[in-house]
Length: 342
Image 1 (cartoon, rainbow, N blue to C red):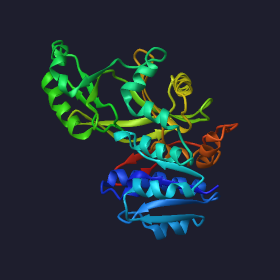
Image 2: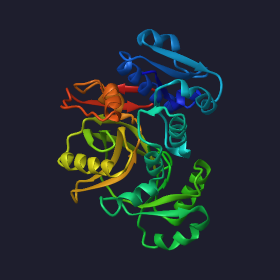
Image 3: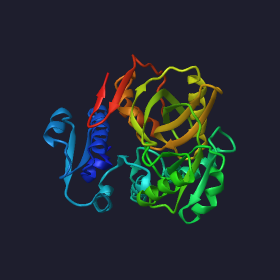
């Protein structure tokens, strides 16, 4: 199998250190896991990754240093590959468009189908898919042209979350306590999203967690419940890292709910992350979103499992799941200018 792997930020040579460093850790983790198979990987000529260093460590993986834009390069070259494992965000339908290019060129996607990616890229569409069958937090779609229609809901002094419908991580998520906060937050979102709307969500307290899952498209296997270290900066939520795995009294129920949710969305394959909120006071579990892609927890989880996680992702897409899951210990990681483990 001729395999191509790439991570979007480093394939574009983006200048945001937090984004590119996180992507570099995921890319290098994949190259390590797949070195026994061999793969090509894309790096922009503007990327901060040292190709010589990476290539020296993963001798069976070959860099493709490109100077052109990623999408035209894929359109012209992807058909020479049998399979591709892309790591890319859902925002602006980036992952969807990449997946469509693979499908249109009959290249196997080591991940979810474009239909599944599209369903999970718009968080309001995901909410509608899940709300009648799974526990979710009440969410409303708000058009940027209809902001005045929401003024009355702030009369009771209740707090809400505003979030982009196509966001990743905690980008753009903000707590609003008043209509003035709401207007200010919506102005920021309008500058950062390509969609004509965003989400207004009830504010519920709890622990931010995720479940890492392998899926064949029919059967899903939870690997771990993970803690997400979420901080606040001027009312904005900030993702600072996490802990893998995370032990909690609701762990088994959380993993089971995440598994069922993934199995309910047609076409979710490979590695999938499900973000959850665990409400300790009410012993409730809420699904926040489904991420049809590699998540940051992968960089810690791959170090702990009793099997090669990168290879298991390929096996899952081909219909096979691990027979046994063992985690040797736990790891906490901090996200900043680099990702550090302890």
